[in-house]
Image 1 (cartoon, rainbow, N blue to C red):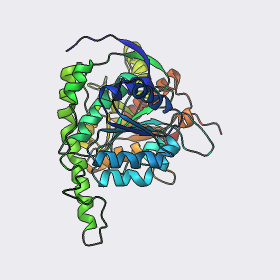
Image 2 (cartoon, helix red, strand yellow; image 1 turned 60 degrees about the vertical axis):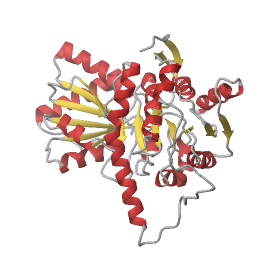
Image 3 (cartoon, rainbow, N blue to C red; image 1 turned 180 degrees about the vertical axis):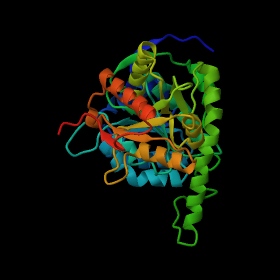
Length: 395
């Protein structure tokens, strides 16, 4: 494993560095806060000759993802990034991207959707696309946002997968925060991601039809193939992460857990709040003997059902934290996935949904302590007073 210098770097700039080292062929993007810095840096890399790629500033996010689909089907390694309204504008083409099995990597810098206008952190943007046939990964810190970018390219282009992959990172909390980063060397990156070889690229001498019309007698078969491909991505994920571990020394699994081995209860969360909860869980364990663990999903789609069951089967309670909500539903998206998993696998433990941090509202160390103690109380008393709680909402 080659030694490289440790950096202090913005989250957006760390992602741009990873994309540069991945030797992409085409970058198509449209600026939207708070992801703009990513593509600004990439445009600079292209302009000054550090990256041999085509940089295309599209007239909209809808156009940017459309360009990525065409370039991918032509055999290029492609990348884009967006957030919030930009991702929503891509919605139509996201389904086309996965259904045409176009390997595309996209960073989603998670931001609230209008209205009212808000540019801060929320997961509603990616949750609106959770059923689009994309593989969705979540980073909890800047190092993970960097590392998972490489993993995303490797997984996306795997011949048994050939699907688009997104990497989510929290707006401003990660995108605009400076954190330590240990990059891999350019040589290691080139070994991990050699030039793309795509068996089905566009060839005018041997034409292939993409995105053809399918009538009721064939449409479901196309969708079944997409279902099988997404499930295959889950099987391939350990393979590509183990290979990345060999060059980076950093291990990534479907889930990451902290202090869960002997815990009575666990708090589940996506994104950067994982670090806040870990800090407080350690203190409460040391000072008060509170047996509560914390866990996060690195892979949200396809959903790691078996791994989550292994974690929860011996717990006495679980609290699921969502930075989004399913209006009119039974709770927020992550929570409903978890309770569905519990029910289907016969795991009968109390579960509570905490909806928090919408529009970037702070989730403090004090908040983390209260949630962890609530989880412990639920385990001790065998249940919770409510199914869903909107955290610290002023009424």
